[in-house]
Length: 124
Image 1 (cartoon, rainbow, N blue to C red):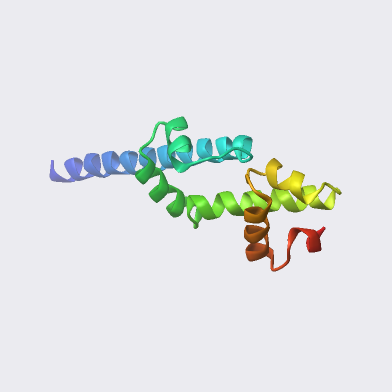
Image 2: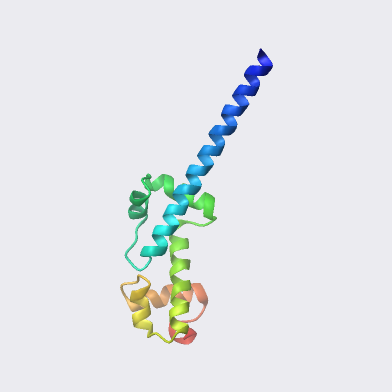
């Protein structure tokens, strides 16, 4: 009887762990999709959390755990990669800064240089 009970408890534990992991991945996947579609907007963690029906603090924790970097670092890196692509295609720096979600050219330029080591104009 004890062996059977242990086996049942292990199966329940395994099922719980599996479902918890799937939920985590699902929430992060939905968050990533939302970020990808809205990175050019003023996008806060709170907004993303609302879209995936999750507490912002918990989403921040899961995001870091699953992605290996914080939400804001991911968003910044994603925006910079998009900006690089747009700059390579010949877009003006001021236009690119708005297209990737930065309200001011100066802020965009600072973030871009910090991430890449060169200004957007030099990169272009």
